[in-house]
Image (cartoon, rainbow, N blue to C red; front, side, top):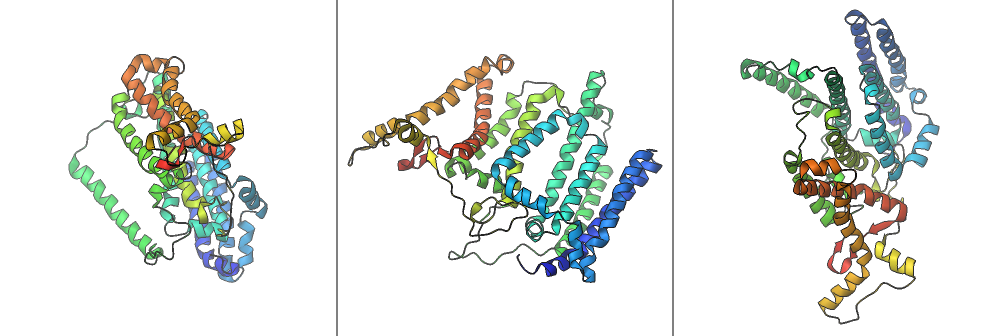
Length: 448
């Protein structure tokens, strides 16, 4: 990972030059399409500009093949920007707040960002920055790791399909305001399973088989040495689809992060059809007709799941420390983090007394009594969160929901939302106050 830099640059030069050359061809095709088919000369000129830019960058990417690896650095990300990202933005607070702010901006500015021109520019810029970053050894070691290559591809695919859904939703919302049917109603022609569907599936099967064969030839299988109890990898990471749960372990105990919250996710997904009272927006893309459902999905899936997977895959390094995308994964990096429970804040820091504890040799009931007394601030706060907040929301922000859903359905929905909000709340408390547990009962391994 930290070998000779010139050898590394020579190793990636052929790939990088071809990468920028393919981007140039992609934009040239887009320019030709806009010029000939769409008759939009301005767009054709814009995409041709990108094509020329990538064509100019391509020889620099090939420079290492010709024995000039230093020349490749001319198209790399400047050191000033890399240092700023690693030193100022490389922390969980900036990452989480930044991704949340990005979702908010994308939501309120969706009519602008779903425009194909804006989306294509964003794709070009993201692909260009990725290529420029490959020149950095540390970035390349993470992104080109055989385990992580499919995740990089899935990030771009997720971005595309999220944009496509938003694009169709905005179009349908505009049509709804004009009194027109959604786009899906215009294209509801039924087709036969044979031959239409079967032929399509067969073509997809052949194409995917070819891609997988090329993938297997081009990438080394991500196999590691046999497991050993005397030597464990650092960091030890779960499969990518469980990295969101592994990130939750930073903020919750295993019983909560690995059992309760995942179970509630499954139960909540099963309960959606029974909780949903809105009959509009079924069978077609829309945002205006289902704003609450759309926002909840975006926050729950993209912010509280996808961003955690990306965080765990690319930014969590040795000892589960946070590393910048251009930062060396130093296993000796130590970040001190004090862990304080709410009872310590209340008794020790607030009242200036020691934590209440049961006398030696006390029976179980006496111990439970002292534990309850010691943890009563956290217990009261938890009860208020799950018992007081739902009725309060029912008479304020969710008043219309309570009227339309009824008591039982509303309470189920409210508690599912509160459990979903636990993760960001606990993350904020952990970052700002070093608060690890609201209720801390190590005697019975029960912590919240």
